[in-house]
Length: 213
Image (cartoon, rainbow, N blue to C red; front, side, top):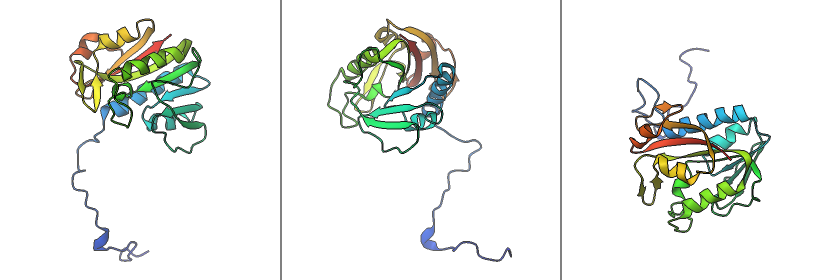
């Protein structure tokens, strides 16, 4: 093929200038890259026969369904069409599962939104606490919960999300054993096995909690 041969039509109407991508490194959203990677590594260790996910990022449930059967539940169900993956509608404050029935469960970067009306749910100041109670109710004894939420100085950024302190989350799950706490900092650093002091120094960190019932 001659180098002068036209391989593609060059038309002004097809212009699509991208002028800001010449960076020295690839940028990424640290919260949404690191927390699913953290959770996937834990699932590799625990290797459950089935995993239930409550409204986490779709990248997570779609990827892990390649090697673990997954049921994904969301207030706004996603029309996903992949083998090993079931997608259904559910309200996190009234989950459709019996007590102590789920051995492997995740709810990541979700709880902070519940009850603020952002996604069409009803306004409910305690919606997050009701959803946490549901997670605790349905998790089986000796079951694993992967729980991720913004961490730092507690506040509500209405109607986007809440930010919790480390102590708040530990208190909400005080009857559970903390297997791992990892942190994504304001600077975008991932700290495996982090601590309360570092998490409380963040404005909008991301706390990754592995709890066992």
